[in-house]
Image (tube, rainbow, N blue to C red; front, side):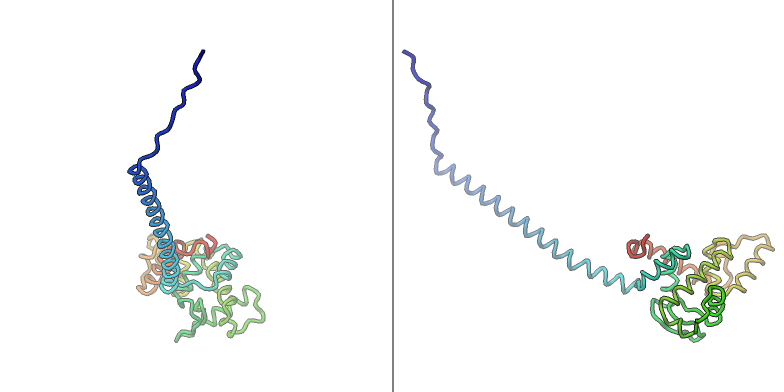
Length: 218
């Protein structure tokens, strides 16, 4: 006669073992609660910091009318960050008129605006229209494109002419060429004010490209 399979009986856990397991489980729950609390706190900090950083950025380097800037950049084959940088350097995105009579966001002189209107077909243009962001940015962008084409794509010369005028920059350019010198960098500009203007626009363009890539469609 064969005997049946042996029955193995498990030993009940001792009170000390159960207490240790309970302590470990409670410790795990505490760690999970602490981790969840830390994640909630981190999310709250991010939610507070991001709007603060955005507000600081908009104060230090504002951007307005980005839809118009993108539209004009695409229409005229311009870098939108260059348009934004010129607006910031000229007016800090505030509609204003200078003592010299330059008007609006891109600080266009009425005589320059009249020339642009004639060339671009703005037959109903009046000087009051320069207070309208759409028209001011459109005319300023047209003039930037015109200057870039005039100087063979040189951003430095185009910006110098935007600030000092086409006549002056043409004279500097011709004089430099007559001397056999290059004239294609901000340091070559003889007027300190215009040289500083060009450098500021170029620096600001780099900032807009870095901080507002999505808004400018870059």
